[in-house]
Length: 285
Ligand SMILES: NC(=O)c1ccc[n+]([C@@H]2O[C@H](COP(=O)([O-])OP(=O)(O)OC[C@H]3O[C@@H](n4cnc5c(N)ncnc54)[C@H](O)[C@@H]3O)[C@@H](O)[C@H]2O)c1
Image (tube, rainbow, N blue to C red; front, side, top):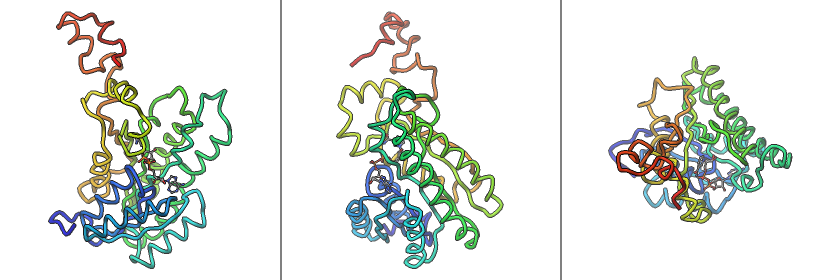
């Protein structure tokens, strides 16, 4: 951990949902570059395990069990961070109620409780964390915030109505925050991942489904939590000192192309290899 890079030496970061997946990779990346990290997660034992891993690598971290949807718990989180590490410079709003995506549906079939709970965690929880972080950042002369959005917040989905709307709204919270507090040297950006194979998704998506999703990327591999963590670390660091209010996609090119050009061999290369465009575009499971 006492590496040579150290972009976060002397900085304190709060990462929500840092017990697993992308959030855990972000916490590790920040700690490996000298940052002290508050590992906040609704799953206290997952937070403790991440903190233990950081400590084993000679980094500094504090585990806190917290539901970001609870305003008082969020306030307590930032009080603990202040007391333990002396103020917060960096915030990664990564936690989302992923379990609710299983119950998300098309608009006419949607259980409004799922909509409300999704918004309460993903959107309101993000807002609550920002509201707790901003005053201290103003006093400390600045800070950086990354909100974990999704490609799903930039394109329609057959079922993920609530999740997608919460992510699109998080993009606008990011732009509003950047607009309102840029004068205080606080930067805020959103990161929009495509398919990222976390432990949770490895267990959930079978190989057939993974292949189907990969067909719609331009790069021929799945995304990894470390890919997203590297982008988050860049956006939090001074290397991104003049970047704010942006939504940055990290999706292997999923949203960057005309859909019919996916599958590596697009219709043009299919034609040159003698295959019909229709054949090239049909699913290959
Ligand atoms: N994995 C992907 O393909 C993908 C794609 C796009 C966006 N994202 C976004 O990345 C973020 C992380 O996703 P992931 O795939 O790593 O998820 P994950 O399920 O692997 O990890 C999420 C972590 O958040 C915690 N958490 C859930 N609800 C919480 C709450 N209310 N308060 C505090 N912690 C809570 C969980 O306990 C878990 O440790 C999410 O915001 C998700 O929307 C993920």
